[in-house]
Length: 564
Image (cartoon, rainbow, N blue to C red; front, side, top):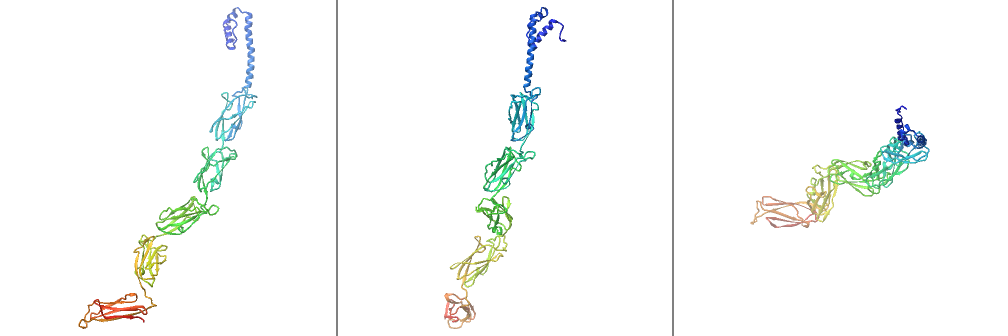
């Protein structure tokens, strides 16, 4: 009433305008007529319009109340369930939306469309929302990555009560998950190498469900297809691979491109086992500089059985006065031939390994002795100066190293050749194991001999020697005697000469026209004396002729019979 101005016309006009504006009741009478000349029928009609509005307004209010009671109000709707508290990767998470009206009353009918979004490490996840038709809306979503997610629930663009929700999704953590089994710990060639991946979450708990996208790659000496993982649906995944080539392989297991604990795994796939394999041969016992040293590796498998094929990557390192690079030949029968060539003498260490592990009894200490040098080595002995056909020819070789030092042990292979008048003669070479070598041979026939001594195809000092072999004396068949005679010289008057100066020569020939040495003396008184020794088998005949100044002396020529 305070809003009235006590001016009837003004107040009536205001009332009519308010009815028109606020209640949409048309002005049926002019306000001035209602004040000055009211018409009862017209007033009754106008008043009836107000009465009709009041009746219609009560109906509208009843309908609005009914609408509000059956309409979900975002401010009162809510959601509940484990899926709004926590989730697990690859496992459906559930929650329920409850529709309520503005009077905080649960609705008993469906029909509302709730907009639900899940956002997190997976990006946008699209959940499934169902309408049960009773005011309840079950929802389900699945995430594939662990982490924090935000769940937003809206109705007609407005968040419901409690929205957005923050949920932590639990799942495997790459750095906590791990793998076990031969395929990641150690395997055998030509056999399956199984392994198992264990899914573990960030808290160190084993995941009890499957679906995790673990990926496995195997790299090594042999190309390997990516192994397939069998999901056991309990947080474990089984895989396997097989290779034919031994060696170290890298097994890389990842989850969402991050390596699991211990990955990549360095896996030894064996054919032979280092600790069971062994080696033998002269190259592990000793050797000589400038000569090849050889030994054999025998491959043995983890069960202690000899291998019968090849392919094992044995390695040999040789250190000492020099570092050597040996050659290794795979014989494809489980054995490997190793050869190295030391140039310098001394102690060497021969280390044989397989997959970075030493084989049995490795490393070995090997002494390499100095090598003789052909140009410095030499020989001495009577056989190098002369031979007789009934005595053995003997001489000694002295081995000397490249630095001019005499060798003090044996083992050198000097090549001694003797060629006589009728072909090769086979010498015997004795190693004295002190750097010297005694040589003995039988020169059965007289005549020229050629003696050569080579080392590694090169002649030793002063080799070859050309030696003459003379007939030797056989004591059983020989006699002996020393004879002399004297010649008196005369002049043409047949007077004895009393002074010397003539050329006196004596020639004595024996069996097979052999010549006998003589000792001729000018006595300087006109006489000349010859002294000679005769030796040979009994019954040998010799012819003696004497000459003065190249002319035979008279008839002084005779045949002698020794021992006859």
